[in-house]
Image (cartoon, rainbow over all chains, first blue to last red):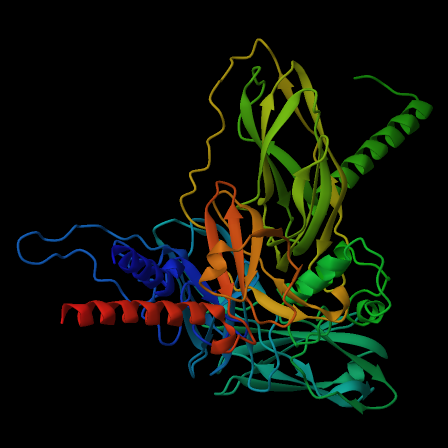
Length: 328
Length: 305
């Protein structure tokens, strides 16, 4: 009889799932909360990544807050002090926009900025060391900002504050080609009531200033009579309360003999998106890495021409293009 | 004061002008160029058997850089390579993870979004001096690309680097500090995908993570249609992208990241098309065992009565 009880106990332990205490679930769509990824998501009280677990860890394996120490009554608890390594990011994006934070080029957290365009993201589960963080946002029309990247040295057991992040404005033009002398509308979104500086690059660089409205939107009609015929680039930056953003990505338009409306904006990256899923991330990197220093197949050649530099091979230049258009 | 003749004055004038031009050219070039250099953590000369760390660092000179590659060549006769560390590198994704091939360390990687700093650490190498002499290092085939969407090459300067090894130097026997890495590799989100261009459109899994202390050593993958009995399955050493064996996506896919001191982090992807409960023999084992135990218990109770 003891043997049966022993077998039963073994089965109970095996099937209870406790063997998976150290195993984290990963999702493929990234929308449901993932306990153990270091990001406090909806439905989680905490998430310290690899530090989740029983006391003295502050966060349990199921992402609920542990009540460690204290002890009550006579003892006064075990007195363990849990040092969580974390970073808090504060900055400005666009009103009610989705802000995405990348940690070492992989999506670590997303949040929605407030009506005043301010956002805050707390990231736990970090280790002491050097990280490359990046942020980007999408405006109300779906235009994506350029990636703002900054290295941060995180101290183990401490909270690192990263403040003053100012995501560059989004920018678009209403015409891909404009008849010389006609106006081209340059528009986008930034922080409400911020001062937008618009640069138009020609032989001479033209700077124009305009104020964003209460919703952060801005629009400037640029008179192209001062420009020579040919391709020109425009970019913008924002200033508010003494803080200045970096320049947005530069977009081009032609000055010629006729006006052609620009195609509706799309969030799909112009280059680097090898699997055409609207993102440039580890999957695309892996596809390119697969073909690195190999002769390209007939099916992959057109992809390389369309979405990379089109030289018929995969080398560092293609990876550099991918890194520029990276979305995580 | 020395008086010069007219021809002498002309020669002097040209010589001075030439020197000024060379000086301005050199200053102008070095001021604008991205610099790739090697730095030692200790001041040479080094004694025999002494260990020291050499860092490969990038000074971007205010340029946005997103890709770098090259080869570091060191004299194997004078130095023994003990370890390559990349845990704190500015490189997020290695195209070619740094490795030693007969005295040549080949590296290639990218930093998505770009990087701009005076001292961006690419990798660190721990050496041990084994023979007297001057160890001259070379950096060959180096390329640094701008974060400009076209992958244009930045102008690059490479600083010369050498280390003297002397038997007369005070022999410091202490090894370079061993990395105290008690933390697991960071959590990551592996992703299953497929693309016509890879393995004839078969499903594959991609993964990447970091370990800030010692760096990632390798990854392993395990596929199992049974969740619990997967503990008995075999781990297979893998690189991203890894083409899945179970193309029906009915298996749990476990990816293990192992750092250089052996800490492990396991992430799991649940099957997209899981087995029905009756197809999973784990469930039948459990049911039969349960019924068996219940029957034995009932029999024992009946006997007592």
